[in-house]
Amino acid sequence: MKNIFIITALTLLVGCSHRVKILDVSAVSMSKYHLKKGQTATEKEMEAEGRFCPDPFNQQGQIGMMDEAIKDAQKNSKADYLTNVAVYREGNCVVVTGTPMKIVAKRRKK
Image (tube, rainbow, N blue to C red; front, side, top):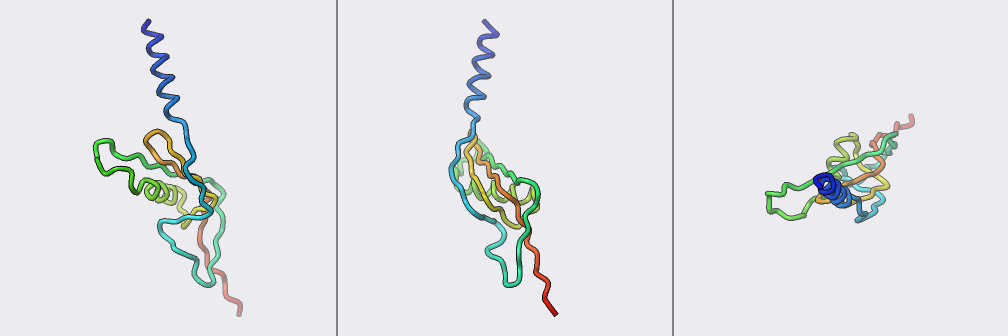
């Protein structure tokens, strides 16, 4: 009987943690607004992922959860901005995945 209870509890926990896509975005950044004249960007070879889970005891609601997840993804991948971004809801958390991009300046021709 104890084993059936444990298996049922684990099944419920695993079933509640699946990802549900909220949004797709072509490009997003929490630190850069645009490329300056003469700048270009290079794609990093890894995928960026960021996560934000609000404090369950803090009653601030769900405002800013995507922003925090984007900041986390940029920080983890050392990216200036992200492209091909997907935003997911996973349980009580928001997860962001995307391609990290690094801004580089073009060399001037002499």
